[in-house]
Amino acid sequence: CRALMDEVEYDVTQARQKTTKVGAFRINPDGTQERRKVPLARSEAFLADLLDGVCERMNEYKLEEDPVTKEKAFKRFAPRKGDKIYKEFKKFYFYSDAYRPLKFACEAILEEHEDEILSLIAQEAHHLADKLCSGKADLCKTAAKQTEL
Image (cartoon, rainbow, N blue to C red; front, top):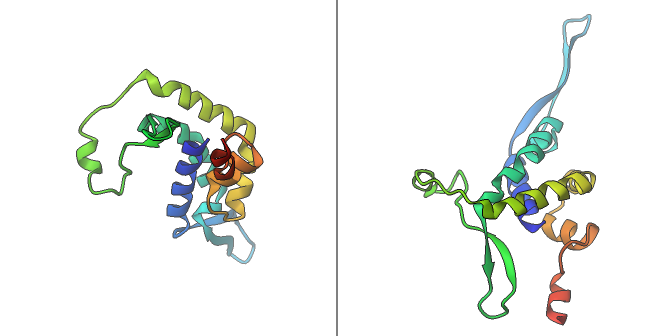
């Protein structure tokens, strides 16, 4: 859940600085067209594309174990497209069936909680992973729960 929401939050944050034109393609009798600019992060097309492709990026995560607490968590190991090392990194091909369960879990979470995810994006919420995974969907431990264990 956290890997999914980290990817969603990254893409939404990048898109918040951009705008897109939305509206009808019909031309009014006076020759004008009703189109307006909205933040890209709020456009239905952007959000649909984002949610359709986000689970494909789960192969950019690996399972790591904290040496002290022995707690396991998925961490991103691959650089993102804008990072300096990205071009060099893409020369290598990494593929493993190990990420498949993470991809399937991502798809299941999206299917069940798509409305909540879209609602959080519409509210321009930050810390989406905490709000969805530990809050609304209750799929992950919160920081308070982790310290109690």
